[in-house]
Image (cartoon, rainbow, N blue to C red; front, side, top):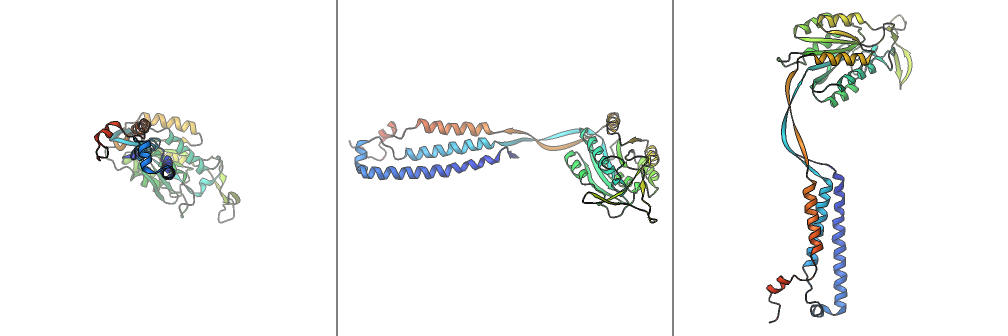
Length: 346
């Protein structure tokens, strides 16, 4: 397992073709000038120690030096081991109401955005707990299974909107029943559902579903968003309010937070109800509640300990460049003495 720290430096390898082309032109120019001066025989007599191989060898050394220095800049990193990371935490499922009533603006900017920001703030203070997300209106749909990937959780959270479910209404029982399916570990001692809603329950089966969840060991905490005074439900186009939702008689619908049903659901599972409009109070309550709960140990495997490898390439690259600097273009004395090609007269 490896990764490249700065792959953009690979573009510097374009220096090599330029180096080769420039060297070829220089060699050709020298050859032409030498031929005009007196030919190879004259040059051999005037410069008997001239080497034909070393100029090419020096270009090879320079090319290798540049290539390894570029690799040092890219900085390949190698994962040294596959480590098993043990975590302890609680499984949390966030069930978020996405019915049209959550568009009411009695809490800024509206109830749904407040609910999403509240969940995001809770996730930000988690360390090793696992989270899942459910969206519900007249029906409930899973959005994210239980995971420790908080980045993915917040990404799916931001995608929640009131248009994602065609059937409208608020069925708290459907949300709670679906939440129960998220907990597939029989050894998990604490199973927690955070239900974020304005409390409008069109199914009127919320308390019954909460009791079924409690029988499975699930504790439900309800967070109410909106105000008891209520507000109309705006219908917008391109961010501009066109009208407000009306009932069949033509009256503007005023949606109010129903704290009573949320308190009833929480009490049925030995949970608690919190005013979701106060973010700081909710965060303090969640932190204290989770701290007091027993934690389940679970494992997650991932590659860790990526180590920089640029030092090796830097040393090798400098070695080739220093070697090029130390080698002269004349013949090496001991090589001359070998007379490998029998070209030295006795």
